[in-house]
Length: 421
Ligand SMILES: Cc1ncc(COP(=O)(O)O)c(C=O)c1O
Image (cartoon, rainbow, N blue to C red; front, side):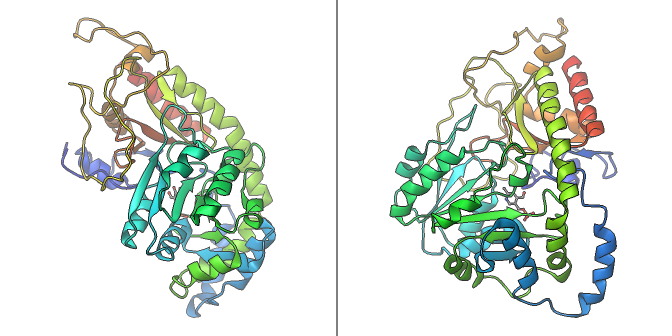
């Protein structure tokens, strides 16, 4: 194994991880590391793309009027409140570019591209850390920590925790930040996976002109290779942010798919059924196999081996964002690399690990370090997402995407084997 190889920055980067662990490039893997809907893309997409190929010889209309009108209709906002983007990722970078000269704050642990975008655009970045086990957000505390920040990033539901800041807390935060002149960017890339109740914050746009909402169509329609996202805000903000977008940033194929994707109610209904069945089933299965599972409102889970009630390390909230560290390993205790502290839970019994006593089931899982679990799953053909580049998690957790029933059962079977190892 090459311990000095950097951990890849995102999920779905199997090649880099196989090389890191000295496994062949054709090692069979089921990918739980990228948070994509396993039911997609919708079945009609390839045929529609083939038809659309005829338009590749022309530039797309630069204002994407039809796609934006479809989004505006669906969201109940004006067309001039919609900016179509090349994935949610482009929207993040455009917002950072349009905020040059401001100081940014990011609610952590979260998607690493907010910090990268801010740095690329010369913005200083502060972190506002939320603590496990529930990663709860206190609006007054966040507002008090903003200092002179003119831009705040919040992800809802949050990647990688899966937690959803309650709407009342968001409203309170918006009320507190408005007089501070701080733009609040709420990334709702995973909001379509929140299927219990309507949690979209679109109605708040009318009340809070400093609110910007980011959305992605690549997650729930499984089109990360095509790239589609959008930003919603008041029309003046949309114009300011859009001024930083290169012309024809969204390609013709992607732009033409927006309206039919949003019209595909049958696909969304199937996705809801899958989520409502598989999410609670997988959560229970993971917990039964000795993993600590953060309750999730999204299509992924943040987990860690439940280690015991004792505080193994002292982790203090960070107030300044660390630069990303390549190839870093944890290692707070001998044989227990990157175990994160956890308070307030009852752990399975600890047993001596001296080679003479065979420990099985959840108790055995409790003794496994996060990196060891990652590696053993990889060797079993299960790729999960490490958390070495999420500030505040520092590799002590793993993120697992929800997949279809057969794949989820494979994961649970691999974890059962792991508990008996
Ligand atoms: C929270 C969050 N926002 C935005 C994105 C970017 O999504 P897209 O593929 O639409 O660019 C991701 C991708 O992982 C994400 O996790």
